[in-house]
Every structure is written in structure tokens, then in C-alpha cells.
Length: 148
Image (cartoon, rainbow, N blue to C red):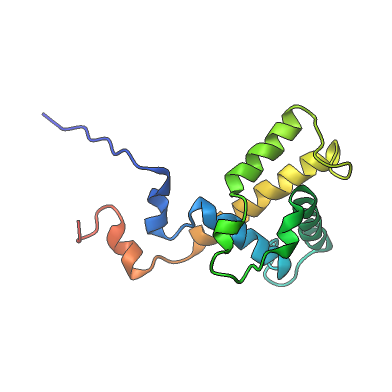
């Protein structure tokens, strides 16, 4: 008779494999936006559309959360001073669903564009972590490793 095993993992289980926790995503996005390092499909050069997307996303975030302009992204406490990415995604989805612009400059198509830029930012950030090689510690956490 064979056993069937089901593993129940919390949302933070991917952290052991090098992915950021949700409270680390927004600081990374903001840091990369300020340093113009977020959107880039090609390693050779950033397209004008990608440059504009970074500018637009930063502008939208500042319109939604004006206090972000005063945040030091190099501070150790930055992840505790920023809204969580899940909160930002949820509120933007809420605004889109009810067609309620949070600011006159973020209405209609701009609101949907904002949501797309946020989704792209998270997707590209996670993809970057996904493409990184496993560290020795992460390899030892993987299923089938000799340390288990």
C-alpha cells in the first residue's frame, strides 16, 4: 500500500529558496525605480517605452502615496515604512473594479495602465529571483537533497 503525502506550506515557504518576502518587494521596486533599474527586456539597452514605464509607475506611486517621496530607500527600516505590495495591488484593483480614480491623473486608462505596470514590476522582480542560481543553503533546502 502506498502513502500519499500532502505538504501544507505557508506563503513564506519560497523565502528559503531565495525569493523575497512580501514586505521586501515594494522596497526593491521603489529602489529600482529610483535607480532606473526596474524594467528592461534586453540586457543591451532599455527601450524608450521601458524608460517611460518606470517614470509613469513612480509618478503613479507618488500620487497614490505622496509620503513615498520622503522615504530613504537605503534605510534598514525601509520595508517597515512602506505599504506592502499586496496592499497596493489590492487597492489599485479595488479602484479599477469600481472605476474610482484615486487621483485625477490616475483615471480610466491610466488606472489600468498603473495596474499593469505594478504587475509587470512584481513579475520582473520575481523572474529575476527565479533566474538566479541556487545558493548552497537553498540547494540544501530543496526536495531530494541529502540534508533531509
